[in-house]
Image (cartoon, rainbow, N blue to C red; front, side, top):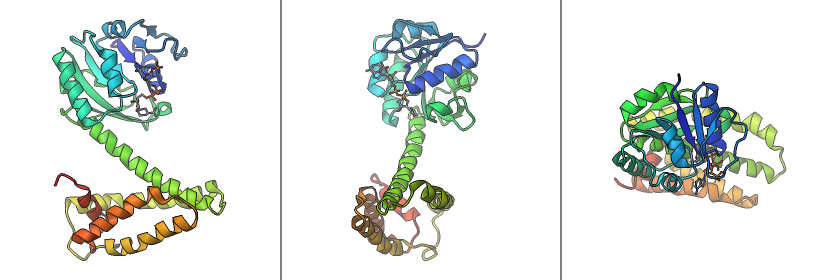
Length: 286
Ligand code: FVH
């Protein structure tokens, strides 16, 4: 028999996770604060309380709104001998603190960062970062695999959240650029889909290819004066991005902080370097 699993939280993501467990043949117990959610989960056992749900399975997958929701939901519940895999979005520090607390209460803790939207769960592009108790991960890696490709990133329980937040930060920055570009096109009523498909997506895709070079420059700083697109030149041109936005009636708020960091890097003496130098001035604990 497959490992019985419990899913706490039947929001959009928790429901998708429970569906994937059921499809893979795991006896699945579910609980949600508001009863009656996700009637499509045929075959799942619906626990009346979170405590009853936790007691039902050795592996407890938690997917609730935020860290405090997890703490409140599991407050006072016996976790002895359970493996808690918390897939709720968290900060690294929240994950580490929760790990310490749950381990003290007798559980093994895994933190997870889901790199997928609900429709992607169980599909080939989805993956989940895990960190924390390595023995618990090895014991349950195969059980967790139907959700999404599992990627273990280390024993420090905060690491999965760090990887997750890093990817989400990259995503929001990328979306911010795309949103601003589309707003500029809208200012002249240029059709959005055509612009996006013909120009914006191919351009961003080509530029994404340069990120590996930026990363390589971080690992091995290049010789001075070898930048193909030096920051002093980029800072000088960046004013045109802001001025154009204002002239077109587009709020430049999404761009202004990028220009600020660019100027900070030039002021710090990195004007003859490439984009990796912006990353160096982002460090606040140097
Ligand atoms: N959906 C997504 O695209 C992203 C993908 C990456 C991972 N995130 C994170 O997953 C967590 C859950 O997200 P979700 O999409 O399931 O969120 P909702 O559909 O809004 O469901 C929220 C669930 O949390 C329950 N809940 C909220 N507050 C409380 C509370 N005080 N006590 C107990 N449960 C609570 C809520 O229950 P109810 O409102 O139905 O009673 C839902 O089960 C999240 O960390 C994402 O960042 C999703």
